[in-house]
Picture 1 (cartoon, rainbow, N blue to C red):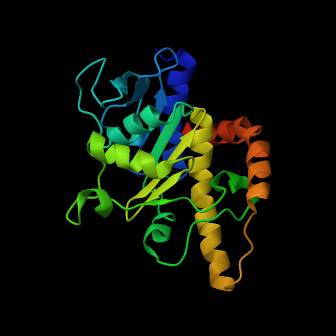
Picture 2: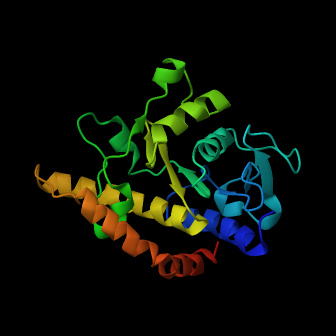
Picture 3: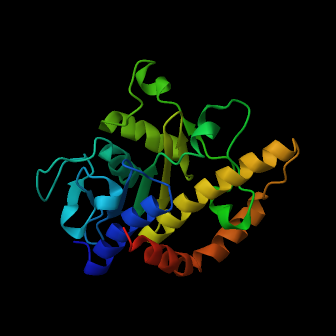
Length: 234
């Protein structure tokens, strides 16, 4: 079971991601059950800004509900298959982060870390192309285990962008996954601004990215507490 503190973090994560413009009426965040790694917790099918503790549901890694049978997110299989393939992951965020989507469809450019807050991007995140797994007539949603597994394979050790769809971010904690989701959107905005100024943009080296990421992991609560305060108004 999630502790009361983790439940509150999961609720706050939904509200923060909405307040920061990473999700809107759609998108979701989950947490792996600390007592059973084959279970995870996520809200019932609800807009993130509306999520409360009583909306949280438990699922197994096949995407089946464990606690109750309320209506669930269609794309819960993103979370299930990432938790299945990545034992180190404790939290997953899936968003339609608006500044990310252009980098999933513009050929010849990749999302790359360019500021010290975004070292977690490291090198260019892979793009998941759903056509390679399901043909060219899908609705782009990851709505079953087969597609979830294909996305998880693309993820590897990265965050992953999804062609024409959005971003899926993983973390070792809920707060880390939220931090990364917020700053992936920030990085995308800054990268587009820099590319508009020059064809020669300076990005972080992988060594710089690793060092920056390690440093910022020690500062998560500073950002979290500010964002939580701002989201209280929701």
